[in-house]
Image 1: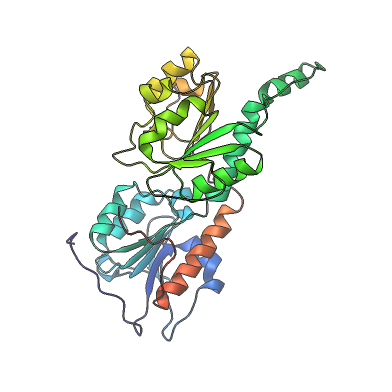
Image 2: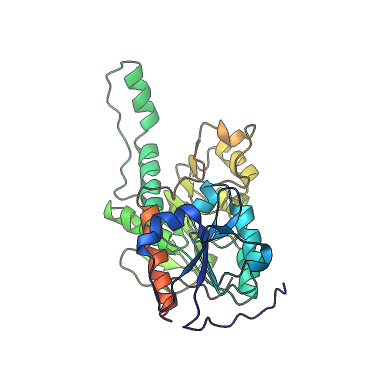
Length: 339
């Protein structure tokens, strides 16, 4: 199919064919809105087959108007199959995705075809709690406290407080704002980096990317919450790291490509910054032989910051609301205007 195909708006009296994973269809059946003509659920099975009303569709019969790229696509290992279906769906008009960052190539391809894309920020609260939890664990030296317990050593452990610590949040989307607000509630002083002007009392100051390096020498915690773009790829390299404080913490909950990992390992070995909290890496899953696994100054998790207990229901709620809006020809929440 031509990537330049311009998709017309679905007529209001035409049944909407909606592509989604079967388990999503089963879970949300009672919440799906109805129209004069009901929805037709095109269900992707766990084996990769596509069914409509219990019958497997031939490729020539596959004509969805809308699709939901949900968490189930990833947990069931269906991403490659789902993407191939999207690429082949000439009549696709709207895609809703659980992603906040749209660096997967399929999004740019669909955007070039005039497919509407709406994204999710349901993971922002979970990501904010994740950041606070891991920064607190480093500030309070939870590993040392646990070791003392196991060794039955009764001893005090003075610790660093969040109050009066200075944070630099790079990227002030939903996740960045959620992180900043929670850290500020604990008494931290927050600076933000963003391309667009912003006035929010949670921040002591908000500056553009060109002033970021100037803020690093006085930042105790630096959090990467920005998208991965041509401009931000390799953002954290040797000059960035050299400007950080010796006792600072670098946190990356955005994308692994933001960080030059070789430069980070060198900097950690040299003691600047003091620690790195990494939820994302350049290669995922991270190879077993990679030195980040065993580095004593690194806290490493497997792209897990989004996985709070509230993320799935928030994703469901947002999809259902946007589906209602789409059917009613209302403005979609979090619709993408550029990729």
